[in-house]
Image 1 (cartoon, rainbow, N blue to C red):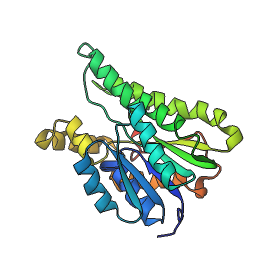
Image 2 (spheres, rainbow, N blue to C red):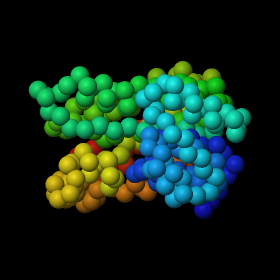
Image 3 (tube, rainbow, N blue to C red):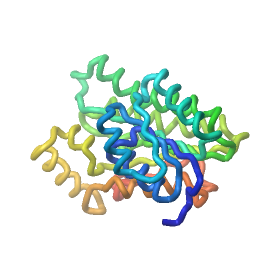
Image 4 (cartoon, rainbow, N blue to C red):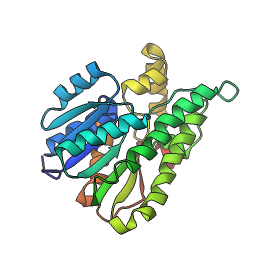
Length: 250
């Protein structure tokens, strides 16, 4: 542990599993006071126990503006400012063109785009000048994927938000960067791929397409997010860091 985030206040949305959980644990190990959000109380309680350290769990759906307000009010009651915001909450499922429904579109964009926009906007009064925002994107936002067009478009939107926001936040010296994972070993990915043997088969195939020869681990994405959030990345702004074993580069 280096203590890079000692006495810092960090908010991680969607911090109960996968990449968000790994990031929350890493921030806590580095000395931060961490707030994590999740939609299910039982899962949230388990995550808080697993994260340890100075962690607070907040039940919230980050696509619901009233829930976002409650999250920041809870933070405000404990701390005067936020040093780091990791807007990680997101998700999606697969439907090919021809089968896309309005509900599928709305669910995906509400979670990934609307949720990200208002998670960041509503944090602004609490974010200190010089704070760091990290958005969770995806390598799918930069490439084509069969039956994944709505999710991919939502993540392309997330990536572009950072480009504009660094201009909006220039005077406050708030950095905004994007970490874009490739296929990563999470329950969410297993669900997208249908679970069980089907998911294992798809992941094994994907590993053959990735120059690193395997899919990623949540801890690897978390390390990249912590780097972007830290003072080690003080001159990195508006960037997209692919953590995908080289998949997007080929």
